[in-house]
Image (tube, rainbow, N blue to C red; front, side, top):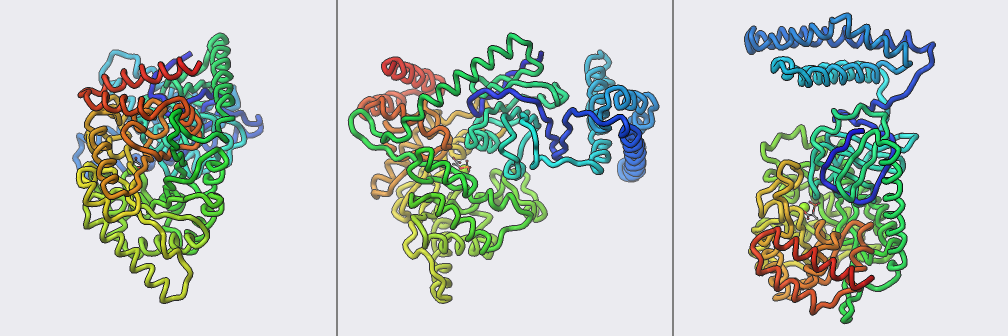
Length: 580
Ligand code: PEP
Ligand code: MG
């Protein structure tokens, strides 16, 4: 039994077979083959070892030319392993004895060797673990090149174990069969975590090297509430987690009646609760789950699912679908927030930012790709004919950028008008506040837009200079940091001055520990992952605005994250205690 602690990214407990998803999307489940197939698998293994040898020899020649004999020596180790008869024989044994397919048997043997190398005192051998890993990947690429399985068409429930899951991988997942995630990297607001929360799938991230601790095929438990993963649980542990799983399900069921109750505080203040979505069809489940509208539709996910940017008609159809699914409720279409970790394939070919979160991302990218941006806006404006659509710009940093974006919307409207194409002429235009620059200049922005939405995920990252997706600094990432809270206060103040409506759609909105604080800071509209709506509504219905304001006043006097968190925990415990 292996137990690992990571960062709880999406609550609940999942128990299922582990499926290791390689960064290159190799899927190596444990399964058995017919005895008659074993000669074929052995041939595949031998051909893959031979092909890998040829590749390494070619690499050695190239490396010698470029880097000299000494550096090229590294490949001697690779060749020695690849041509080692004992390696071939051990894998063949596994294929014959257990009737494993070549890929799984080879992975098993290489994992065993990596564990052995790691355990020895010899520093040279310890350092060779990385080489073994490279060799494993190379050979697997050849084996699976012949028998690559499709992650999109799973037939059994699994828990995905991976180094990372990129947003473009996540959009292609077969959601029905994925019960949980256990991921090496990432933090609370990395996109993988957000996706898991949206889907209501338990997830633990920041597990460091879970992918090398387990082989795949074993039973694992993902406790997303407490950030724990257990592989090969013993009977007692399994029973305990099954119990915990039932308790969590019962808690979710208990909240269900709140769906039809209004989000009103004890002293009569109504709060608008909306949902964040990533795919058009999620609008329906969100509205059916109690959302009063869609406060953030991350439209870039439509782009991530494709090799190239979708055409105007393709986008129009999808946005129109979202309008339909929103069932007359407000639908906030955010213009594409591509870049950083959300890369379209065609973007990779365009160039590489050494520091992508500070690079050509989001609206900056759109302003440099005007044709694509205009196509995108045309589709949005056309879809607006059928519903209550709003358009929102992400990652605004300067007033000029905002003005440019708005004037492009005007140009697109003129074009549509001239062409006689119907469009929503009065679509409200809004902006996200995700950079300290925009927060500090809120008054200058607020007069230009119809609405503002605070993106605390990025705002926290940029204010604290902490990468939101890096588990090594995850302990420093805190949206409740006094610096971030002061910026939120300034944003709300700036919006109030111009009577511009303001909402918050970062992950803070869906974490019930922050609900009282956010209401106390003056927010009356929040947008979150749909599965979080009722948790937040429960807090709203148990509190008073006057108490929330007192909480916010007190919190704004603290100067350390820890103080803020401890105090908010105390307040929430008191609230939960009084509700019981
Ligand atoms: C945010 O940054 O808070 C936000 C909502 O946008 P995203 O998470 O998509 O970057
Ligand atoms: Mg953002």
